Length: 345
Image 1 (cartoon, helix red, strand yellow):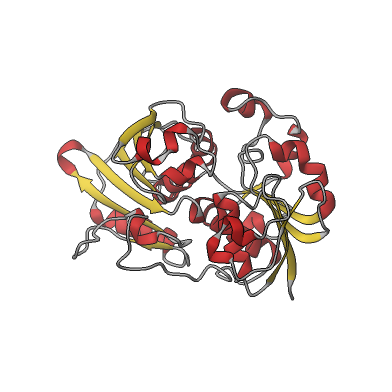
Image 2 (image 1 turned 45 degrees about the vertical axis):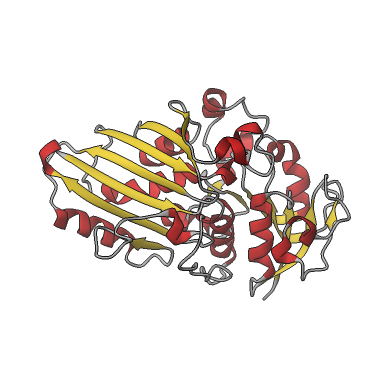
């Protein structure tokens, strides 16, 4: 069975990734892409890797009826347009933060409030490794934040294996590429300002902490740095468990959680150059790498995770969740394994 799909906000970076995936997806027919700024231009005008397509951007005011609508819009847009989105499509997958959290109170605390809080309980978080059972048949899906996704994937096995209870101190340091700021990221994302930096831009209070708190039940000390790469989010988590933990405990926890996951790979201190997770290794893919190391002298675990922020942290996660929701093979359209060697991600 083929499902028709549209992408609202298709001229941005994440919108382009959605278009790329859907263009090659065996079960989706890409029917519409919208953009206010690029209306009537071909999608290849914004995304040169899609120059083979004749599809043109249309106005977001003129939504076609499709099976699945992917909304790659800035935060705040989807909650205002959700009625039109749901009228146009049986399944809506939102890539902004508008439906990620459970309650209006959380949006009051972390964002600027919410205009459609009655819909929050209907939404399902898109990360299948965390929420697969609830995604089947879901009609409102919220793709997770890239920094939260990297952190959750790194820490989740420790909670599932009861190595952590939620009372421990956890310090998370995330390094992210410039594409996280989007196509209109502003002065701080321009190449002259971004090149060569390791710049803390959210030392405390990053909004993605709310997702980590919601799904892992823990408050983390969270800092995000902008670094000189285009794609990628790399999370290093410093964890201080209350009791002793062996390397065997860690291998058991991570293998038990991810052994059957198609998009998560364990990379934990092996041989060669790529001994721990790196964004460069997963650039352009829906794969996540996770790994760990023990620091017995300081009673510390160091957990690493790496994703492509626009794929596993956004567009790839959204399509993966849509596959699950519609009963499509989970890996459909997401088989690309990356390149090696490759330049800066």
